[in-house]
Each structure stands twice: as C-alpha cells, then as structure tokens.
Image (cartoon, rainbow, N blue to C red):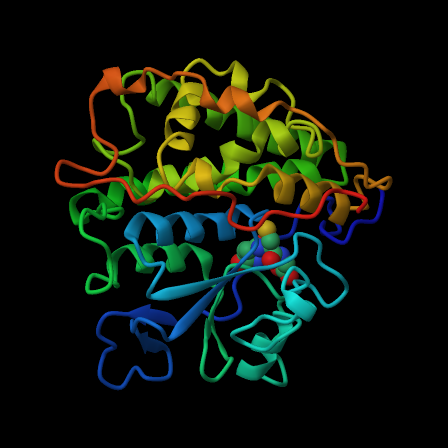
Length: 344
Ligand SMILES: N[C@@H](CCC(=O)N[C@@H](CS)C(=O)NCC(=O)O)C(=O)O
C-alpha cells in the first residue's frame, strides 16, 4: 500500500472538517457574539480558489444573490505551497485588501496558537478590518449567503434554501456529499483497491439514481435552482476534466449520462454557473498539486470545453431557474481571474 498524505491507515480518504464554524447572520442572537457575526455589507472578504469545488459553491451563490458589492472576493493561486493557499496572482503576491501573502495569516490572526491545526482551507470568510478568519465552514457558508443577506441581495435573487423544501434539499445533499462531492475524493485518494472500489461503486450508483431523478424534472428539488443544484454542479463541472482520469472515476464520463449531462449544461449556461467555471484553474490545481497521484504534474489538454455550450432542451421540462419572480444575475464580461499560460 502506497503512503499518501490524504489517506488513513486503512487506505481510505480522510477529510478534515472545518476548523471555524462561526456564522454570519442577519441578526446575531443576544449573547452569541463569540460565534455569530452580523451580515454587514463591506465587512467581509470571501477568499476562494476557482479550482476548489467547495469554494466554487460560494462564488456561485455570491453571484446568484448579487452580493458582489457587499462581500469582496479574493482569488488564490491554484497551486498551494507548503504554507497552503497564497495570493501570488496579486501584485507583489499580496492580497490588496487583507495585505496578506498567505491565507494562513487570516487563520493565525484568528487563533495564533491553533489556527492552522486543521489545515488552511477555502472557502474562507475573513473580516477585512481585523484580517481575522470568521468561518471556513463551507456548507453553512452557502446556506447563510442565501438566507442571511436579504438587505444586500439584488432584486430578483432566487430563494436557494426555501423553508418548505429544506428537508428534501438536506436529504439530497447528504447522499450527494457522501457519494459524489466527497465520493470522487474517496476514489481518487484511496490507497487500497478495496477503498477505491467501494468509493467508485457508491459514486456511480448515486449518479445513476440522480440521472433517473432528473429524467422528468429540471432541477433536483422543486421547480427552480436550489442549494442542492449548486452542490452537485461544482462536482459535475470537474468530472470529465479531472475526476474521470485523475481520480479514476471512469465507469463513464459525465457526457455519457442521459440526463445528468444536459442538466449540467443547463446550469452551466445559466449566468452565475458557467461564467464562474475556470477549467484552467481546475486542471492545474488537481494535476499539479496532487503529486502523489500525478508525479509528472503534466496537465492534460482535453477535454474540449465547447461541448458545455451545446443545446440542452431542459426548459421543455418546465420550471424556471430563478423561481417565478426571479431573474438571472448580470452576465460577467470575462473570466474572473485568468492565469498566465502554462510554462510561462
Ligand atoms: N477542508 C474543508 C473543505 C474545503 C476543502 O477541502 N478545500 C480544499 C480545497 S478544494 C482545501 O482548501 N484544502 C486545504 C486544506 O484543507 O488544508 C472541509 O472538509 O471542511
């Protein structure tokens, strides 16, 4: 059995949980000042990697809710070094708002003793004035961006976590997290054949189930886009480019699923989704950072991304992406953070 920085002694992928689980909420409860922060425009900076599926969720929700003016965005280099995520894409390698070179500095500003003991992960919300990490609790971050920022959100913003659908959304998310979002990592970082095969089997069983679910409904839950679609989308967007090859999730490609593939294209072609997908960041991160599974660090040239723009005809199933009164966010006019050419 090969050694891996990502697997436990039994060869199974080990995921470290979030270290800081404070919340940013519309109205912090009295006496909760040590773990609830007020949702105030201009106060927080979202630090994200365009490569990371967990961080990508928060970028999508920020766009869909129209929170760009309320919460600023920092994009880190897709390649971590031994101090983890860094601001090397910024002038002089320093984030212009936080003044940091490394995201680690925000974790240590929050807790100088133990701030990095569980890693330094994205997405991270950081208080701009103090430079302190507030939360890296990615599942709660997207829910709260969707429900706690009503006074700053754009007119026409969708309801991503509607009260009456929460139980169903949570149930779908649970299966998607274990078998799909995290399942691809379990397959990719397994160091025993058994651990890999278990992850592979559960992943494709779940994808088959989701494919069937999406045969006669446009979105996973209800009639419009919810938190559940965002969570599935960021894994599907990386599937053929990374997980199929690099993580050995190769029973079939996403593009060979009857319903999941048009479903993913439908979302991709919705403002907020495809315009936040950056295959360059994605491929460079996975293929160059995980040297235990890709020691040459060669980044594959394929697949050709134009297939994402092919017609999907999912609108014939009914539903409306942003709900009956919702509208799409303004399209972006270009990539969020283009990278210099490989090898430059
Ligand atoms: N580690 C987080 C999820 C977010 C995550 O895994 N982000 C990755 C990038 S895709 C990361 O920042 N990894 C570095 C680290 O955890 O130290 C968790 O499971 O709570």
